[in-house]
Amino acid sequence: SLANHHAVVTGSTSGIGLAIARAFAREGADVMINGFGDPKAIEEERSRIESEFKVRCVYNGADMSKGDEVEAMIRDAAEKLGTVDILVNNAGIQFVSPIEDFPGEKWNAIIAINLTSAFHSIKAAVPGMKAQKWGRIINTASAHSLTASPFKAAYVSAKHGIAGLTKTVALELATFGVTCNCISPGYVWTPLVANQIPDTMKARNMSREQVINEVMLERQPTKQFVTVEQIADTAVFLCSDAATQITGTNISVDGGWTAQ
Ligand code: NAD
Image (cartoon, rainbow, N blue to C red; front, side, top):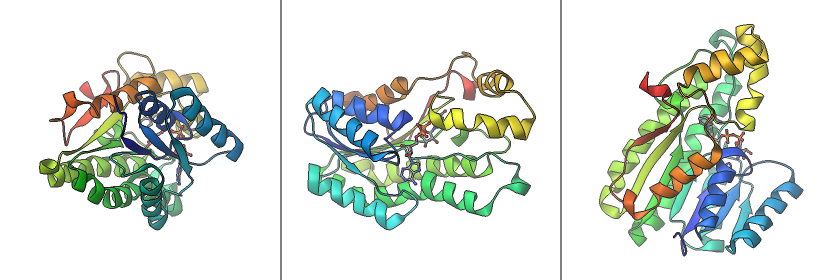
């Protein structure tokens, strides 16, 4: 059980992050959710987590592209819930374009949100974890932390970066009871994936069905999308006692993608 633990999950108003926050709450942890979206919908989700799982759930709307807001979010969680001992860096965006047309501001935004935000949140959360001699840092990486696909220059760079950050932090914290791992999903059916279909259709001159079957599921030997619940339960496992000696690893949940 994760009772008496306090988790922050970035980018948890949707998709994988929301599933992770809900799974932690199901296990009894208090959670801070974060991300963008319709304020009413976010408030409904927040209060649903509290009533469904009988835990505390608070929301912080920090913009993961702004380092000072990221660090303030960790302080806010510590004040409202107690020392943050589980941190999931999950917020992420995607942009698909040939590199010669790739807008510089999209590159900067992806590096800031998908990579640099984790530097700031880890930096802010580590002192509390070290003092308690217990902590779990989990970064949502991607199959694209291990392999590349064309037209995703910024995303692949950021995800390779987060895999390296994961290993470095694991080594620094190894004797403090704090583990740091990343989870690398293949294609998971979320808004992030659905929304990149139109641009991929354009970049590759394909139909919607061709993008799904010939680009996305073509990479996944199981020919199935990963589910958000499967990623969330992997995160729960990484917080369990069984995972105490698992640190610095990159756990693929990708239907065999990176075995190829
Ligand atoms: P999603 O679009 O459903 O959710 C992304 C979340 O991040 C949302 O809550 C959104 O509000 C939040 N977010 C975006 N920009 C933000 C910002 N500047 N500040 C704060 N929050 C912000 O996407 P998802 O598929 O659930 O992706 C979650 C993570 O999983 C990402 O890091 C993504 O790269 C990774 N991932 C997804 C897949 C997939 O197939 N869906 C595969 C591999 C890795």
